[in-house]
Image (cartoon, rainbow, N blue to C red; front, side, top):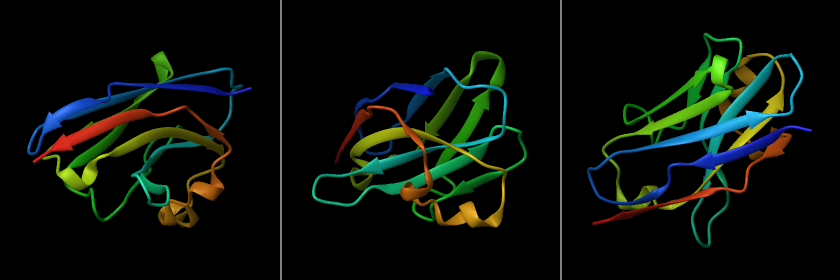
Length: 128
């Protein structure tokens, strides 16, 4: 059973930065898409960024392109989301997620329904 634990959330002012981490455990060798999703109060969960554990493949939501960077350290089984130039509209609960699969263009839609495993989330609050 895959387990995902997020950390790194917090409260910062607009324009600031945060780095989220997702520690993964319990999965066997294989190909995964891992990613970050977020859900603001009263809104649906939306995809932020995805990365392929085999490397060389990432997807980003248009709203975060150029500001957020997803990365991974396979030796530590940890995924990261570096968030820069944060805006109040980035305020949300951020979730780590994983799904079996190879990197294909099908993942460009960043669909939450495609993910198999979820963490419990870490809260990010951006003040203006």
